[in-house]
Image 1 (cartoon, rainbow, N blue to C red):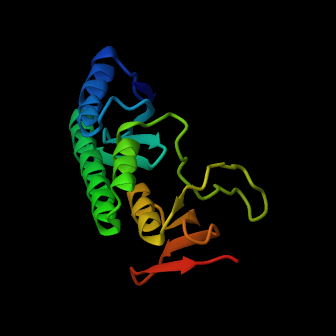
Image 2 (image 1 turned 120 degrees about the vertical axis):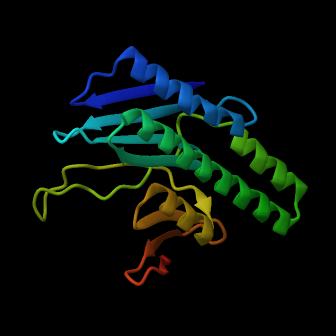
Length: 193
């Protein structure tokens, strides 16, 4: 079951807006074996120049779906976000299927399919850079579980979140590692021991 948390900034979330958001985002359910049990966080913002920004985040155990869209028409922005989220789901599903074919293990393949279909609201939270007022004061702390994965999956998660780094537990070594995007557009890996 998808639970919607829709917030408006400089805009009232009317029943019509709520209905449009829920109708469009519920189309994502067709990508799962059963309806995901997840929280859908939607932030709607209207700027003084009448432009709008719509953000949607859906944290799940093996995937964090996140998209952002700016548009003069909020309804159009919502439609475009659903398209972005669908692309993320398809990309993730293709990658999982390819990985399972390479391993050739039917047991793992079925577990991966089950993971795509059975999601829970206590998913992995997205890592986020602390917002600092000065150089020494921590004004925000975020906690999240480190899911075991390889560096390729960590890079995929990082890109889907739109971040420049991602912390993860290496599935082979069980060490905490960090992948990051370099200024030249390539990726780096920091391994801990």
